[in-house]
Image (cartoon, helix red, strand yellow):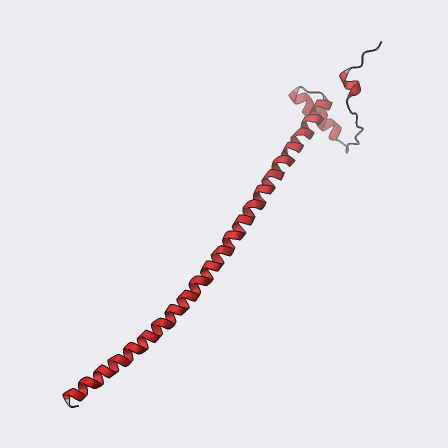
Amino acid sequence: MVQESESRVLDKVIVRLPDGMRDQLKAAASEVGRSMNAEIVARLEASFEIDEAGGKQGFMMGELSAQIANSISMLKAEISRMSNSLEMLTEENKFLREELSAMYRQASEHRRSEDGY
């Protein structure tokens, strides 16, 4: 009975590589002491880890963007409320100045009439 090795039961894929990439893979694998197959698998695993990290980062950026948008909306509402309050205070200030001017005129006229002018 022939015992099957691990490499015989693993998935196999035929890949067409662009010109020169096989030599790049061979050189990269040799530099780190791996087979070409191990180098290809390591590079694929690394790309999946990057994708996963990017996905988490993208999700976090989406959450942050939503929080920023919500904060901006709240700030706009507060600015609008403060602007309305300022307009009301400006109108009230104008009214009080007019009332104070009228009272000053009346007091001046009263003083003049008492002094005989």
